[in-house]
Image (cartoon, rainbow, N blue to C red; front, side, top):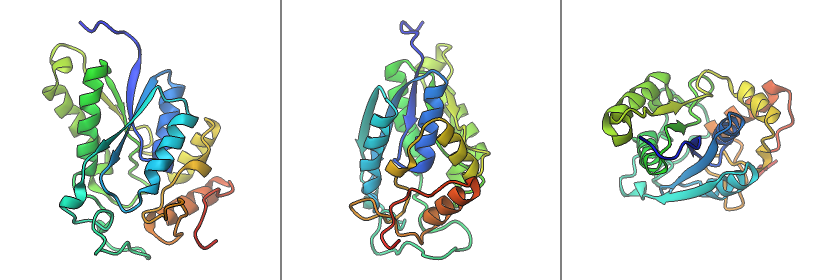
Length: 229
């Protein structure tokens, strides 16, 4: 049996709007939050600085950043500088999709959860106002949870893992309204796919468009720092 009964959760934290809200939700549910970010040599490195700010502001127990260079493979506008980030809406799954990123991040979170004797992992994926990534859908989350409960010592010994995706069925405006009610300061988050070193957003990429529309829909002022306001 597990010796530590403390209610702990591993929270995947990118530094963006959704993951900050997810952390606030986990905190509100009484979890001690252990935040995990991934430095995968992404184009928008400013998000990792934002993740540090968010973890500190929301009182995470610990915040670790794993290093894994996905630019070794490329195949995404976020990991390959020869592929431009689209400035207008595109058809199908966009080139900003990073192959297997959520699977990699959830696997790392799963490993840490076992070490922490935690049965709970939070991820801020969303299947409504999102870019169409296949690893942001509810069926993907359910499938990963099923795999986690087959693959881990803790689950085999009776301590099942739950993958929490509390934003999965919310619109961006609903996410923002919820996070605001939980005290999230969205001014310290970075969502832009090509933010500059200071975290200033381009205002044109898919993530910026979704974020801006979310604040408008929520009836709240957009605190985003834009490169060309």
